[in-house]
Image (tube, rainbow, N blue to C red; front, side, top):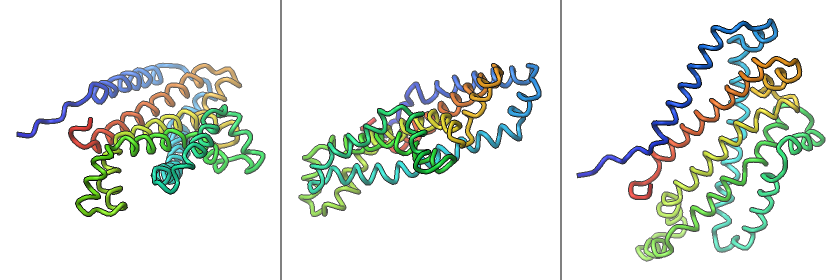
Length: 245
């Protein structure tokens, strides 16, 4: 008889945390008195647009990072390109090590301000977790398993897609989840280069000394990051073959 997979504590406990925070914020929002500026920024029409712009910015950057980092990570684990792995990882590490604000500002000298520049900066900043986890995930696949698949007649390509990648999925998805959380948090800084995000609420709150606007922006960014992390955890759990988790 197949046993049901045990649900990790973070999968059911994390939603309780952001539900409590979300309900608490909603109660505070309904009962607090806002200035005209705060009402304009936190009114549902404007707030919805700001949240969607933030999600769009993070999502576009995430798609580009995944399209770049996973194939590159796979390629760097193949014998013909293994010698280039340290170079690629070190280049990706430069993007991660650089201050996010400084990185975004530097790109404005090349691409100008706005959405496109913010996406490029976020992509450079978030490549490392996915690239590194793809390499680590594929490298940790037991060599005997690979040799056994080749022994039964699988080609190198078929072994990669039917054996190596399925076994590396948990590690790769963990890197994707980490990158998504980084993107959601770092996207707030895009407001400094003219791209709309929840960071707009924070910077407006700081500039005009409106604490309620500042706190609202911080709470909403935190909630969004927690929800993204939780959804990524669900995907990671569902995609992990039984016996590996």
